[in-house]
Length: 234
Image 1: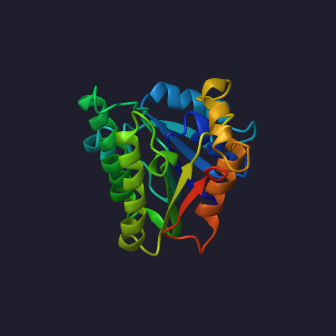
Image 2: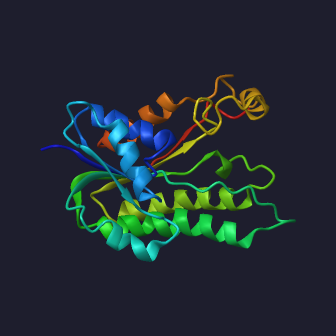
């Protein structure tokens, strides 16, 4: 049976790379982003030439969880769910943006959980869920209070969801600064200090993140794992 994958946050960055990887392996992939037209455009770009529409795009806004049930209504079966949708939030306590913090917290904690809730009866018993957290849970920086908090919350979600929806497996990946990602590539003001803080001296790559994601999604013994991929913190 053809593998069915849902990637929320699959229109850019690591999510897009992971979608392309699975599409090229013959899976049927649904990518979701906040904007339906953009999701459909990216899906068309990812589709292999012989893929016959095996990648399609839909709109899902994690920051509006009450709408998620309707957005996912036409997904009948899924073998893997990847939740990589994020919000950037550099938000200091001195100048705290409540609206931005609320949007991030709702999207990553309530939104992630609502996707799993909505699809819980449609996930294959041998399937898996992969959540994306991040390095800020271990290495906070000025303005990272909300990011650090929600990424630590992702760890909690892994602990509880892996028990609540067993035998479906639940894991999380926590990337460091991914040097060749569209967001960071070429930004040496950030990349050079990040290299200096990395024990290997080499920043993680998009390929590293895809490889880690595939491992957590497919290894049948990987369950309840919070995998940090950052080259080691100095």
